[in-house]
Image (tube, rainbow, N blue to C red; front, side, top):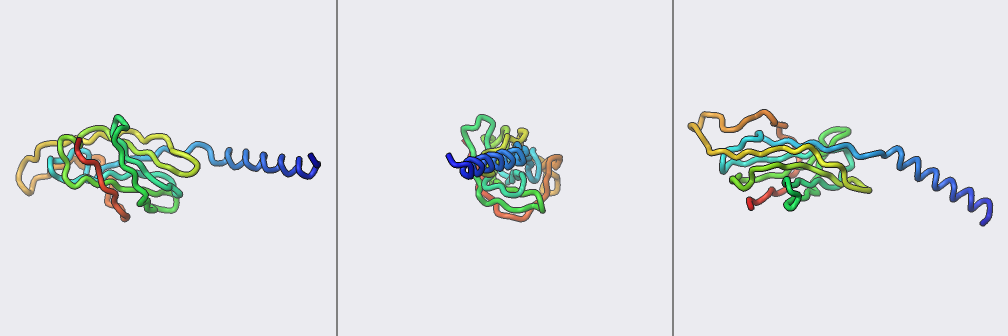
Length: 152
């Protein structure tokens, strides 16, 4: 092998290692629910997954990973953050459970977010009484919503 080709090959390998080292592990995504994590039967809920800019797709998974939804409708939340929303129009008891997010940013998948537990309760009180717990509210963010999970 010629000295120029050997030098070029060495330079390419060093550059590839430097790029890989700078990328490091992908940051963990976060998950939230709007209007909260306790939703009255038949009411809507929207999950929001957040990750870094440059995400290609977000995935919302149920606790056993057998059910999931992917969203390619990723929107930018700020200079360093992107997100996707997953909407359930009318929750049923089958929608209750643990949910988490993961995202794909080339060249691979991120770690999972922490679990978020969705509780479904019977609606109580009159039309003026609050029916949801707002403890995990993330606020409404602009963007496109992906369809949600159907109850099993």
